[in-house]
Image (cartoon, rainbow, N blue to C red):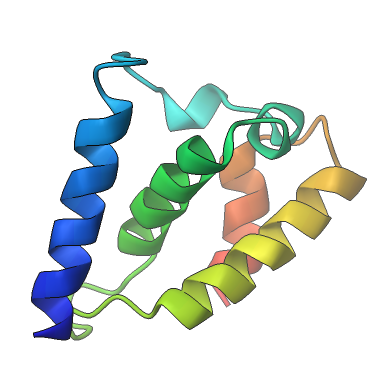
Length: 97
């Protein structure tokens, strides 16, 4: 049931955001400064993508929103201190641990 709720929430975020800013985002080109200055909904979508990207293939198919929030806060702190670093460089430092 929680997984279904999470999927509905994620889908509703996508539906809400997509028509307003329909675009292709190349995560590999985003700098930390751009990430921390992005709107909250954009940060949330990027964090969802990063969470999936850094999950091991054999991990359970769950979304831990508390863990994602903590990771996002750590990533935000790192990016604030290192605005010229690439987001994936920062994410590798923070999320791959």
